[in-house]
Amino acid sequence: MSINLHTQFQYDPAYKLIQLTPELLEILEKNEAGSNTGLQFKSLSAEGTDVVLCSDDKTWLIKQKNHSNTVLLMKEFVPENDIQVSEESLFGLRQPEDNYLAFANTSYEYETRAVEGHLNLNSLLMYDGERDFPLGADEGSLLHSFDELADDSPCSKKECLSQWHQLGGCTISNVLCILSQNFLSKALNITLVSIMSENLPLDDLKLDATYEAVRKGMEDAESSTFSPYSKEVVLTVLNKFGISTKENTAWELDMLTIAKWYGLEALQTYVRNSSLSVDEFLIKWKSLFPAFFPCDIDVVMLRGHYYVPTSGYIQYLSKDTLPSEVKSRFRSLFELQSTWVLEDIEPFIKEFNTKGLKIDNFIMKFAKRKQITDRNRKITITTVTSR
Amino acid sequence: MPKVSVSRSRLLQLRDEGQCSVVTPLGTAMLEIQGDLAMEIASDGCDPGDPRVSVLQGQQIFRFGLLDLHGTSREATLYIGQKQRMVGKLVKLDVPMGVLHFDTATQTAQLQDIIRYRLIFRDRPLPIM
Amino acid sequence: NFTPGDTTPTPKDSVRIWVRYKSGFSNAVRKNVSWDALWQ
Image 1 (cartoon, rainbow over the protein chains, first blue to last red):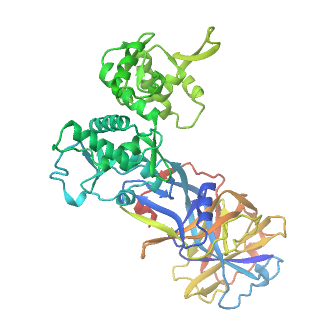
Image 2: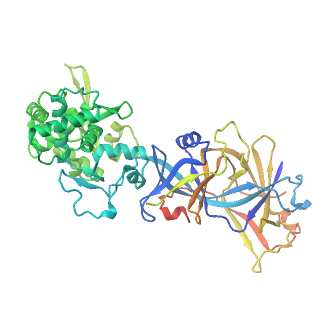
Image 3: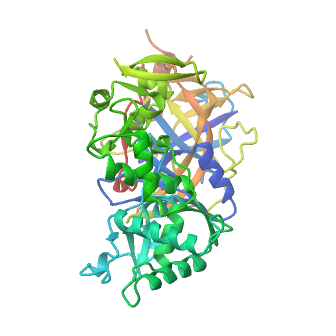
């Protein structure tokens, strides 16, 4: 079978090739019926920012991969006039019946790399419990609905919502904002105290009942003064510290997240500049919770936020204060602590493992391994030391 | 924030049901050559009397070669002009490729087709014998 | 030292098209894309 090949004199640069990974194909299949593919390109600005491709729940970074071959995109067409190929141009083949036309010559393809989408925080204010909010803010830059925020973020909607909950996103006076760490701590504490005093079920909390408990608690405390603990704030607390059940009509408290929140506060309050024994630290940590709050704690919950200056002691360590270059990061960590348990050091360095190696193999590039067998517990602990 | 939804005007056959033809069900083909496809047009323009020139939808197009598909073997020969012959084959792409059209005038993006196979010509051109 | 194609009379030669072969293939360069680049 032979085919005539034609070309346009000018190729159309508007055609681009994009890699369709199995996940992207699945999304296209899911939306097979309509004209909308369920995919959207987004970028923070026209120039100087990355372009991402978003589905409802995932985000891909677009990268342009140039190559040195000629890749022609061709389409079948029916000629307007009869085409007869001269005998000497047929090289013994039969007269072609089909005709293809090259309409684009692509020198690159778009790679689609799954990434974590990021919420655009540029237009969000911080709320610290003040009565007058937003005071003196530029009305034009404020956001009033979550949909606006999701629309304005290079991120899928589902990722936006999950990050919004993680960050403590809230709506105060019809303006989108993030609750400050300090205010969110107070709001959490008041919510937990109120839930306990009203004996609400920790695994089946309703927004209205929880808010009612908080309101009652505030009334009892100081009547007639302004309470910043609105229903929206209580909702933010439930979304940040609870797991929603029954299609967002109820929440179950997420004990691990709550324990970590108080633990981080304990690290920053009690062992920021000097260490404490682990036992003393655990007592301090427990003291931050509302009385009788049923929550297990263990220092390993706080991995990635502390180091062990001497055996049995603990001190706060913020990743933000460590060098941002990998070798210096390892050097700093080993200056603070000469031997690390693998699981303890992992959160401080995993961001550098961009090739996705097995984490111990990655660490071995910068450190030595030492196996310690604990006879009492009959397990082998892998520790790493400076290389 | 700049954004555009990806739409499509034609139903794409999304599932790969053992298809292994040169063109997609919508009639698109991908032809890859290791090297450049060079074109030179005389300074007084292309001669409309040249039998290789024809007109499609008001636009001049040029017949530059011939593709010979060898039955079901997936092997193919590409003849470029009167002098060059390349031997290649039809291969499945590792990752299927979407053909997107970005229309500047309407600021729309449209998925035109999905390509799973390409004709690839990797070897040095041979003389035509 | 000629190829048969050289002796074949070609109709008119106002257009020439040929493959300039490359002995290698490269695709090392990857770069992030800007919004404006999508529409160019």
